[in-house]
Length: 418
Length: 91
Image 1 (cartoon, rainbow over the protein chains, first blue to last red):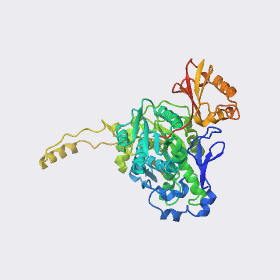
Image 2 (image 1 turned 90 degrees about the vertical axis):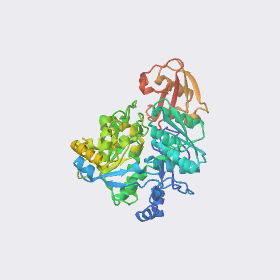
Image 3 (image 1 turned 30 degrees about the vertical axis):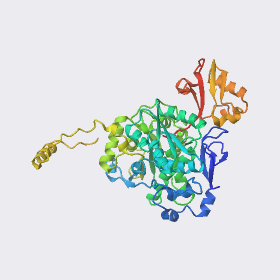
Image 4 (image 1 turned 90 degrees about the horizontal axis):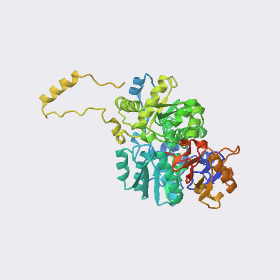
């Protein structure tokens, strides 16, 4: 067997089944690979990967994919951009943006995890897939369910952004709005998963799903010319992504694709929902749950299941965790757009806002190679920018009118983002 | 206080398939002791080697995480519905 589920705590093996919890010790299950056989197969080398398609399936040898799996969508392999304009603004250099605002098919990094989850949903025989979601996962699951012919049920907190609701319903998914927080939706879904034989991508398919996040790490390393950065700044909701990027880097070192190197991991949260960053700052290894109150709804998970592992990843690497207020999130969305032409959602504002703080406090140094993970697209959360820009009065379609308008506009000082 | 406890399917093989238990318990500690007695096979799955309630086990009372109600110091009310739920997330 190339891979199977193993308990993260008691290390019992469970084979390959739709299950996310160890029935012995209640701890999460994780996909464990037979690295020796992968190394001996020669399927995971720089050369083999270079011959693969320009999407996450180029890393198939280190993803939990059933033997007969045929990809149906070109997911991932998003740009890694050297962010010189943003770096100037922050007084630094060697700054990169991993831009999953343009991840296909639904413009967030969740497309990666769902692609891997649905590959397994098919092989486990589910005809219905489902998830609890703060929005991006809903979009990704609904779209890929449509593409792959699954029935789809999506559970969301009732107060989600309109674009994320429409962006789910349009794919024909059955959307269930729950009056409650994401944590309550999540708890309900774990009960529903107990009663219905559905493939919940982030419940019973979760170990497979979570492996999709590793592709962010593989891509960063490959796009840096097969080397690891000094620092990664990553938004945290459930806390899984940061843990999986670290796993990806460790696998690349273990299989000899990159030189061993210590990488510092930095977590980013909104102050209104910061259970992981609070624990890191207090030196705790476990989180205290919070009741979220932030515009960064995609990160509004008050009881993050992978919180413990995210804290471990951050502290053991010598990294840190920061959090930013809602106004700082909006300013950071604008700054990224104005300096790099990247329109990110609130989670991206959180990541950049925290990165600014980390530079200011010298936890990240200017000469170090630093990658900011931008995980979602601003078109889904335009409501947070309401009131930030004046509605322009229309002018007549006459050159003279325009010249007059131009004269008036040039008199007004250009807006500057603080 | 008389309360009901919902057992998740992952743990039902240690309760002989029982999904719902009615019992009397004053607080969380009391509840776990009662479950230990009722289902001796379940005990090592709910508690670690040092007797602590396992890290990834969440307890809800009437849809609310018990940690928001005071955790171990919360006193159960008659009719409380308790859920044992594994930690799951990822939005």
